[in-house]
Length: 107
Picture 1 (cartoon, rainbow, N blue to C red):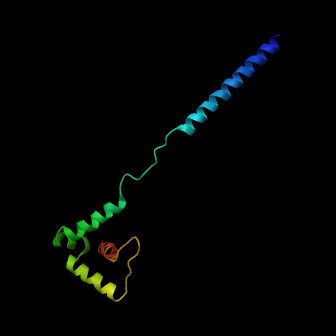
Picture 2 (cartoon, rainbow, N blue to C red; picture 1 turned 135 degrees about the vertical axis):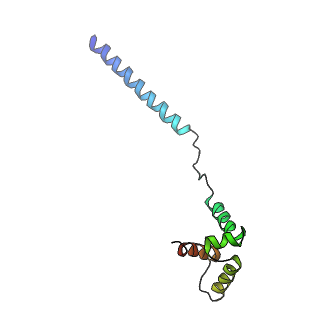
């Protein structure tokens, strides 16, 4: 008689464990996940940065890229007219020149 009681208790425990796991799995499947998105809009931030360099004044522009905005625009026009630099889908000629000038202008 004892073995039947032990067997029934073990079966009851096994059913309880299985039922608990099924409940947990169903809760995870029905859980609403919030998609992760970047907190910073990098494209807008980069455009604001370029805009800031070019439109905050001649002095600020010279401090950042070592030339005035008018000279930068003329340089971009020359590079474009001789097909020395091409605009890509993600980066314009002006941005490419600004990044180059910032890198070269570092100590």
